[in-house]
Image (cartoon, rainbow, N blue to C red):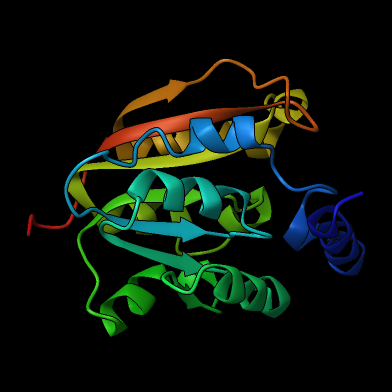
Length: 199
C-alpha cells in the first residue's frame, strides 16, 4: 500500500460519506478527467475535491506551467498535502458548495474547466452545486465528474446526470475505466446553458 493509499483509507474511515472511496483514483481515470483542459493558452482550471492529488497531478502535467489552477478541498489534511506537493497550485480549504463566493473573493472568473472529484453527497444540498459550477464557467467551459460504474444506475447518480443535462448543452459519458478501483466512468459536460460573460 502506498502512502497516498494509506492516507486515503484513513480519511475514508474518519469520514466515509465525504471521502466516498477507499483508494485514490488511478492515472487512467485521471487522464479521462482532464480531457477538457486546453493544451494551449492560459486556462483557468478549478478542481473540486482533490483528495491526495491524482487529478491535481494530471492537471499540472497538462498545464505544464500555463494558466491558473485552483483547488477547493474541504479536508484540511488533503488540502495541506496538495499545497506541499504542488506549490504553484492555489489551494482553498473550503466547502465547494460555496464556489461562487470563493471564486468572487479571489477575482476568479469565468472559469475554463472544472474538474470534480467530489462524492454525490456534495450535490445534494441547496443551492444545487451543479448550477453553481455551470454558472462559474465561461461559454465554452467544460466540466468533468466521475462516477463508479457499479453505482451509475442508483438514484443519486441518475439525479446527478439529469442535473448535468439540465445545465449543459452537451453531456458525454466515457467508456468504463476498468483500470481504476473500483471501475469508473467520466461525465464530460460542455457548453453551460447559463455561463458567465466572456473575459
